[in-house]
Each structure stands twice: as structure tokens, then as C-alpha cells.
Image (cartoon, rainbow, N blue to C red; front, side, top):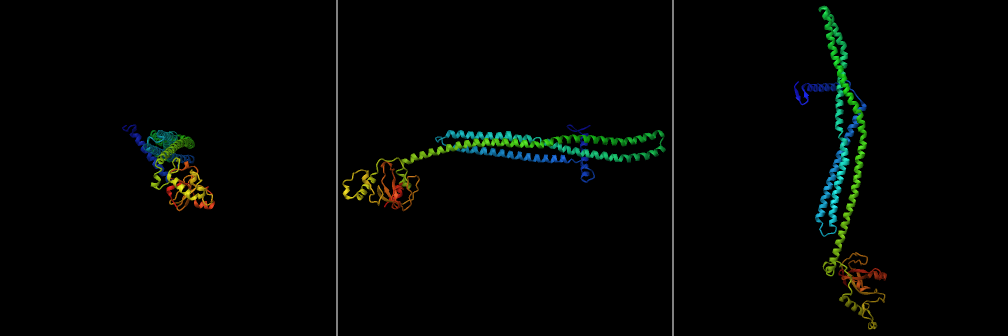
Length: 419
């Protein structure tokens, strides 16, 4: 017999074509209602569950893969961000080595997270779904064999009905042959006709038995496997999401530790910057305030008042101290301030100034200024506490209302002018 292809002969090809034609004819007859169809409601429900299960599993696999792509994208973004920080971070800054090590730890953490989810969640779903194509193919085969079984059943039934008709047709010619043929030939003719009828009938019966056997074997196997597969989905979902949750919890915990370390490094870097700025600012504190119109910094205290302040105090003292007591007054820092005994001026009053700029206090010992405020300048109890460019004073409005110096504070001299 000629071969059509590897493992395929002309006879087998013809047989397959004949099966397809028979199935197509059977389906048409069933749809037209001219042939009954084998139905199994329980199995149809199993197939519906199988299709639903396969659809849900495929969606889970797709979404899990999309999540993995997102994790990889976040990993790449994190790596670029850490590379950017490493490029900007100058070698002499605090925590340079720690920052570089932190970047490596972050990269390793992302890699492990991606790998763990791939191995323990995605692989679990992939293995679960790998069995569906083979079972789906067997369900389709079972459907085809069921059509073959129905076709063979209908063919055998039709032969059963026509057998009696054939026997009647055979009996009539046999009566005629008895008159025309010799007696020895009459039995042969009758036997031949019966044999032809029985041959078709027996072939149909054998084909029916073979089709029924193949169909029932597939049907029984699937009826055992489909419910088991349906129940297995619970364990697969639990395993996939439980492991995903475990790795997420571990990843976010370790990521929190690393980000806290980065926060601490940045905090100390800022503290270092402030210390450096404070040191640099102290060197130019005496000049910068007047040029920039800003409050001066407060450097370490000087030992004695400036010459201008000492002269001003002396002049004020000449005006305030009565003539009878000028001769007996001692020449110390105490002789330059008024004692406030008249009740109109606070103790230690030197002179008045007027605020020409607003100043917002940044420390508890500073005096808040609004434009136009009149301030009573006071002498420091300890001259060593006075910083260059800063004065001690009390708003005149407060003194007139309260008659106490509890609200006194220091303020930048260049924000005021003498009255």
C-alpha cells in the first residue's frame, strides 16, 4: 500500500476522512432532531467547571507575570536611583562607604525578591496549568468518540429495522427460484442472500461495540480526573498567595531597615553641613549683617563692650546721674547704667532705638521686632554674654504696661536705628 507520509497510509487517511464525514452527518442529524444524542448532565457540569478553572488559572498566571514585570521595573528604577546618588555623593561627605554598601544591599534584596516569587509562586501556577492542555484534548476526543458511538448505534438500529424487510424480500424471490432452478441450487441462493444480510448486520454490531468501548473508557477516566482537578485549585491558590505574602512581608521589612539606614545617613550628612556652615558663618559674622541686611550670627561672647558702647554709656551716665552724686560714683561698668530708681526707666537702661525692619525670633532669648517698635536698650548683666552686632532690650510698650523686664531679649542692632 502506498504511503502518504511518515506513519500515514492511504487506507488510514481514507478511514479518517470517512470518520469525519460520518461525524459531520451525525451532528447535522442531531441538530435537525432526526437522531438522538447521548447526553450526560453530570459530565457536562464537570466540563463547565474545567473551563472555568482553566480560565481563572490562566488569568492568575497572566496577572502574576505582570506583577513580576512590575517588580523588575521597580528594581531597575531603584538601581538607577541609587546609581544617581552614588554619582552625586562626594567622597569627603559623611557616610560615603555606607551609602555605597547600602546600594548593593538594595540591589541584592530586589534580586532575591524577584527570584523567590518566580520560584515559589509563579512556578507553582505554571505547573498547575501545564496539565490543562492534555486534559482538554482528551475531553475533545471523548466528544468525538461519543459522536462515533451515536453514529454506530444509529446505524446498527437502522439495520435491525431493515433486517426483517430484507428477509421478506429474500423469501419472495426464493419462491420464484424454486420453480425455475433445480432443487439443488435453491438452497445455495437462499443461503447467499441471508449471508449478505447477516454480514452487514454483524459488521455494524462489531463497530458499535468497538465505538462504545472507546467512548466509555475515555468517559470513565475523565469522570475520575475532572473532580479531582477541580478540588486541587484551592491548594494551588493557597500555596501561591501564601508564599507571595511571606516574601512580600520579608521584603518590605528588610526594605524598611535599609531605608531607615539611608535616612540616618542623610540626617547626619545634614548635621555635618550645618556644623560646617556655622563655622564658616562665624568667621564673617561681623561684616555680613551690615552688607546683607540680615541678622548677625551669634559668635562666642566678647570680653568687653565695644569702645563706642563704652563712650555712649559714659555720656548717658553723665546725663542720668545727679550732680551731687557724680563725684562719688565709681568708674566701673556699673557707673554707665541708670539704676531706674525714678520708676520711669528700667534698670540698666542705656538708650532707645526704633525698629526699621521686621525680625522674627529664632530662639527663646531673642526679641521679636515689628517696624516702628520702640525698644529700650539695656546693659548686659554680664558683658561677656554680649555678641557682636547684638543688643539687649525691652519693648517700651511692655515696660509702660507691665513695669518689669521679664520680656527682654536680644535683637540684631542693624535692624534698628537710634531715636
